[in-house]
Image 1 (tube, rainbow, N blue to C red):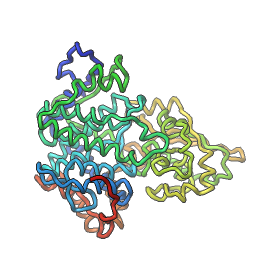
Image 2: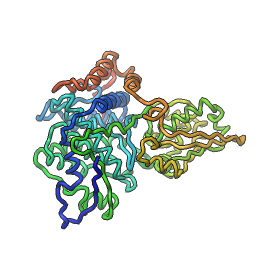
Image 3: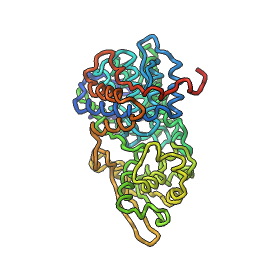
Image 4: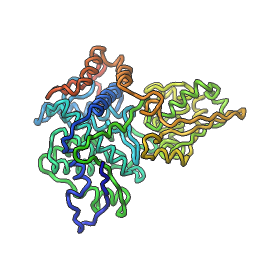
Length: 505
């Protein structure tokens, strides 16, 4: 890897194109390096994982709306169109990226990478796959495109913090998806450079979508970034240019949205000929919840078994969770969001409330992507009582481990102190989720397939489940025009297209 210094330049300094970060990203995207067997296997895992969570979302409101919007945009003349999860109809690729991006993101249940910033790198897959289907690309083309998308997003996330400036993390997704599409299509460096610049320029937005009363836009935000990446690639292919330099300009993203004119970053990118392996640093979710909640659900399940007395609110005086800065201030009591303790809050808000998640997982000894968020579950009086006894605080050591670049000590958990009314104190801790590569039960292909089967059962016919798994595992051998096999069709009668809400289109 090469660490590339990035700073703000005055216009009169006239930063050379090849020295701009967007151009360096484009150079990585055009490097014809082969995708390794290890990375190929992980990409297949994540394609299966995305299908799992998309299928489980097919009849949720945001997906119904996004799918209805997509269906008003027939395949464009540049290709054969792209598939939408659950149905056989095809649409224009940018709208397939939109509909499928919402479906993948809705349940907050797919992969994650956390470093200087946050990300869900599998958000790259819907736009890259949509373009691949539309253009008749092969499985190997798709693999190369997805490997690039992961590589760029993960390395941007390692180097550039968006959240401390209240910029949503999808600002790293627009450029990465544009780069991945460029790799997929075999575009030249200049064209990808322009697409990356537009992909960033059009996807910077505030983090209010993840603050206070969290709305349905949380699922739409990455889908919007993916859709913008498809459109950016299209414009760049037609010779249209983007703001230059997009990162380093004196009126650019860094100068006015991030660390300002004195900013200094080092962005790691692969050297020429170096394999794109960033996907191997990422991890998926066993539970449908914010990633920082994964380890806490696992610890709560353990405490449910070992200390059942702590599941009864009447026995508990207080529960203190000591954790990282992010967990405390974004999804913990440090956020100072009263909605995080509100039994009538939206699912999206409860998903970002560690006090709620820990209380429910502690009482139930389990977690379910629907039942654990149900209004009757959130409103249960004994749960509300226990929930209001849960607070968080930042612990310097857990914050240090959260930001550590050493994968062997990087942690997303913390310690918990449960004080019972009789004076008994229960303490325990967890560093990473059970499903993490360093966790108690790391996810491998078997677990990805089991997650898919579990979420698809009753929503997809058994024969279709088996067909999809076989197609995904055969990705490397899928020829040009065969990527429609990566769609998944819902069981007859599950989706009622006529019942979708009406809009402008």
